[in-house]
Length: 100
Image (tube, rainbow, N blue to C red; front, side, top):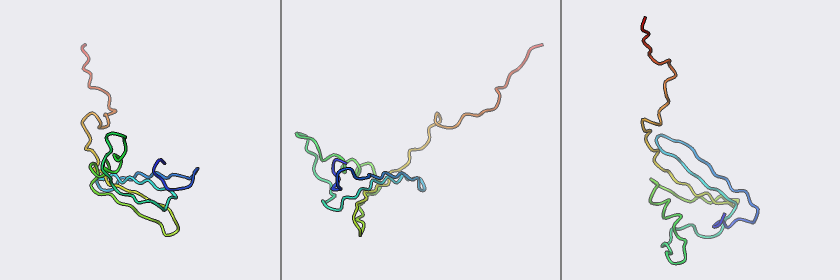
């Protein structure tokens, strides 16, 4: 919302989709003005980090402008591989040996 050129109180749409090993992230608002570009980070006063982070972490990213107004910024980020701890656990009963 901070950098949106849309009107106050507007709706902000965030989408996330998984596509063939990539995660597509989108942010869409009603703003249709302002240039969406990376700028050098301002380490003294802050700012300029957002699209630089997107650029660094994504495989590709871009901006789409709707004919009737609105802006969508999207990025494709690689999905992280599952670690062994992230895999589902088996629900089978444990192997138990009874002594008689």
